[in-house]
Image 1 (cartoon, rainbow, N blue to C red):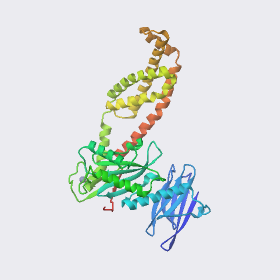
Image 2 (cartoon, rainbow, N blue to C red):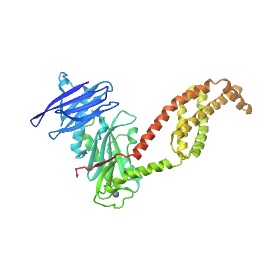
Image 3 (cartoon, rainbow, N blue to C red):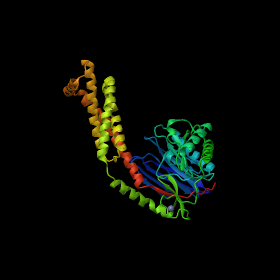
Image 4 (cartoon, rainbow, N blue to C red):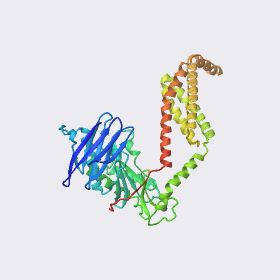
Length: 439
Ligand SMILES: [Zn+2]
């Protein structure tokens, strides 16, 4: 099991930090002067970062991995310390260098913004960083992350403000100002993460360690807050935002993070959160699945999808089968619009309707081919096509098989995402934060 030992001297006192890390067992133990301070075991080890303080100095110990090998580092304040076991290495690996510069970037951004460094425990990598506090009286939360489709790092700035009456002029203003001041780029994946809602605005910046330093990002954040201040006023700090709050303006107010969204809540409303979530869960469980309406809407959609399917298959032939997942998604959309609740059964029915839609699409394709060969379109064409489909099942079997293979992963993905959303909604993560800055 790999071990790393760091001998450090802080304020004239020597200390020893030791890490025992088992990359196959997922075990991680951190010892400070023979005292165990971190003990973790993970099934999948994607690396982790740990914070602790020695003699009042903040330290960060990191385990980073590229999926195959692991690297370890220790930062004491801003100073990187080499492990005894790595002292033979003349140069730091690039993974460690990146980790250092990332940590130093966030340290610097924390100082520049004056926000509280409130990193998310349990997360690692760039997404663990979170700064919370006030900039010019606006409540701001800055988080690191990765754009979903692109492997680009992003920094997201969420600004809570007092509710605004009309979002559209504010959206137009934000968009025009962001572009005029060239704060952000017009990248598609960033547009999705930028917008104005009634009581918050969110702007996402791309972040490249080579191009953007902390000063540049801080300048942009300042500009963004300034732009927001033109269309929204700061969130009042003495009003509870609980939807059914009885005391509304009160003393016992806490800045509360519910699933990473910041709100002011009084003690009573904080106690209400799990109860309210439970109530909504019970309502959800009781709600009628409305399968009949959903299935009818799904069948009509699958029938309609058969026509474009046949047209495409007429020209592209078998390749069309790979698009069958589009039928699946269209049927799902129709079922949702019709009000059907997403359940295992509704997903299964969606799958079955999709298979039936494929059979229908194949039948229509054969009709088109029959017309092409016989150069006639009569009642007999339908019968002839039916017989052809029965006699030569190759196309049908191929289409159903491919349809099944491409649809099942989507079903799985939709179901697991759905379950994750429900878990978050009905077991919300609640944290109370008290920013210390008062800019
Ligand atoms: Zn309240």
